[in-house]
Length: 86
Image (tube, rainbow, N blue to C red):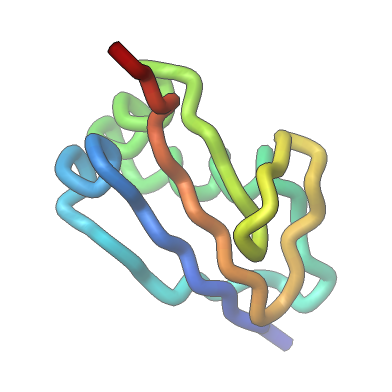
């Protein structure tokens, strides 16, 4: 059985991927942030480039996360580039 999560893309990532948000089907057992990024990169070169160009930051349910953070059904995952100040 599949579950779904909501993925949000911010700033430069949103522009590169031409996608602000989507619903993503997830195995019922869930996955980690790293596994989710791997699955997204399998979509093609544009996705691989977007996630490889800079260190993409991630939040799960609006809490900063890392590659090992679990992702489960109904979670909200946000990907965004590092914020720089001036």
